Amino acid sequence: MKLVFIAIFLVLFLSCSKEENKKASTNTRPLPMPFPHKSNLQPLEKDLHKLQTVEFKSKFVKIMPGEFLMGSADRENGRDLDEWQHKVQISNLYYISMYELTINEWNALATSKKDHSFELKNSEKELVLSLYKNLLLQPSLKGKLPPFLHADFKKLTNPEISSLFMSLRSMIHIVNVWNQVAKNFKTKVAESLNFTVNEYSTILQTLLDRQNQLPVNQVSYTQAVSYCHKLTEYGYSNGLIPQGMIYRLPTEAEWEYACRAGNAGPCGLGEGNTLSGLNANLDGSKEDYIMGDEGTLINRGKLIPVGPKFSRFPSNRWGVFDMHGSVMEWCYDYYGEYPEGMVVNPMGPLHGKNRVLRGGSFYRTAYECRSANRESSAPSWRGSEIGFRVVLGFPLR
Image 1: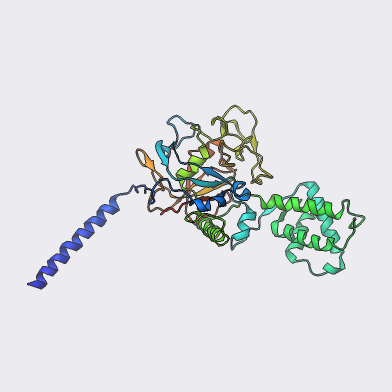
Image 2 (image 1 turned 90 degrees about the vertical axis):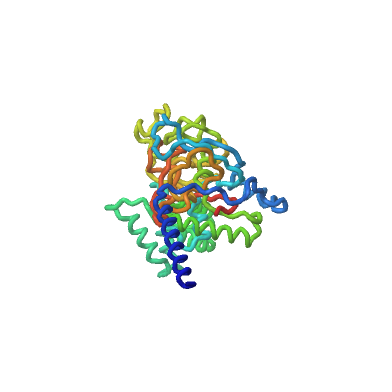
């Protein structure tokens, strides 16, 4: 009798479990998850000085809690169906990077180094070629220059190719070799060269800096998250960040909140209604590709350096740069439908296939670079127009 009772209990239990699983599987719309921590989280008072250093304040913008309308208005040009407006409350402060992550910052911590080719101006090409030829004449370097350097310069001197491109590693190598060789010279390297040793060193370093300050691209979501983990470890091991805070990707809501900077228009720059190649690195080659009455059609068709030394475009009202165009930026969230009604600290669905990308890119029109525009991709995808920026904030899930 006892065995019969146990058997009946197991049958009922398993049937209930199957029914619950069936209900869960038919719910195709993932529910947004609330922030798991209590609201109004603040850094510990004893750690506040870490956020006041000149270096930190030159790289990050403090974003205070607040409310905003996320998504786009019904009549906004370029609007997609997945952008319906809803009120969002951000209840915890965070710090967002002023600029997108650069090649230099990536190479300082990441395991896989970036070696992008970059374009030289004609005058720069002649300068670098003259240096290379001079280095070949140095007895101390005979047979010591690497094959990849010779291959790069073979392309530069090939009249059939007319190449203006060389690799980052070649530039780094020639800068390092030059600095070593230059110590043995006085003011002039050779009569064939027109500048002093110091002048050449300055020019070469400028070229290298320009390349290193390009936004890092071809980075997957997984790689971006891994970088944030390494940056957090570095921050804690060197006492640079407050206890309880981490470097991570912004949530989609945090990204749009910082992008808008209080602006309800299609973009977060100026009055919010003008976006073109004049104020962002995007495809503004046609009149129907831009927003506003700029009248100037610009399409650079490539990435350009970012950061305080090289940035060409204005920041938004809160001091954040390049939120429109440049590279698409990974966000924390899985891509999914927005919730209905107000939500606090949304983080997207619990599960999904693709992760959110925001901001458009140098390859996209102004309408694809609007504050509300949403894209998504598989976490493993490493596209030429995909990069990211980091946030210092509190852990999410």
